[in-house]
Length: 238
Ligand code: ATP
Image 1 (tube, rainbow, N blue to C red):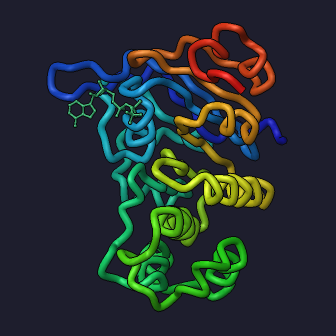
Image 2 (spheres, rainbow, N blue to C red; image 1 turned 60 degrees about the vertical axis):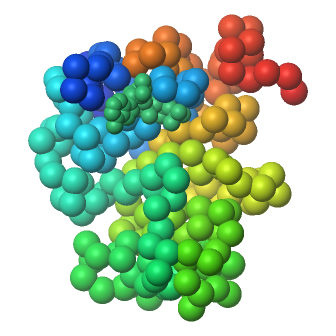
């Protein structure tokens, strides 16, 4: 791991109307890391991810990417800058084929890069097998692979993964976590939100714990896995 600070959130506040969802978050992600954001339902994880990819506007605070202030950069430019978001709930285009979905992921690069496509197919062989299948007819796990593959098509330096294991059969969850490891090993920095805290911490280098819009705990994955408080609140029984 290098010591280059890739992403920095400084005292970010986000509200939905009068409801404050994020109340002053500070967070750092270094290049090459896998960092996980843990927390109960409604803690603000998705809101944080959407704020980073600029789908939501921060009320105050700043976001820096590679040292540049991106707090007011529009979402479409964020992708071109090197941040890609695989959203919660997958959101693939059901009436388009797998390959067409992947092509949409590369829209910032004008046309599909055959090398990149080959890499995504190597990571997710099932997408290659099903390249002509309509995305809407794929299983939940396959659609998740497609959402991640699509996010990779724009060659991100930072990949935001929101709940990649949600609603997926356990056997595919293992496969997807293996694939995320491979993505990270290829040099892509990953920020991942996961309900499955234990699996996320096994994958990640570090983690942050959110409670009602605030970070209440942060540390290395080992520290978080070893903490009695975290075990009780988020890890349950082995
Ligand atoms: P989950 O794991 O359930 O997705 P989360 O940690 O991702 O939870 P968020 O979806 O970020 O949580 O929600 C944070 C808070 O903001 C919650 O109280 C939620 O009810 C609220 N919230 C989220 N989206 C909206 C919205 N569109 N309008 C109003 N409030 C919202």
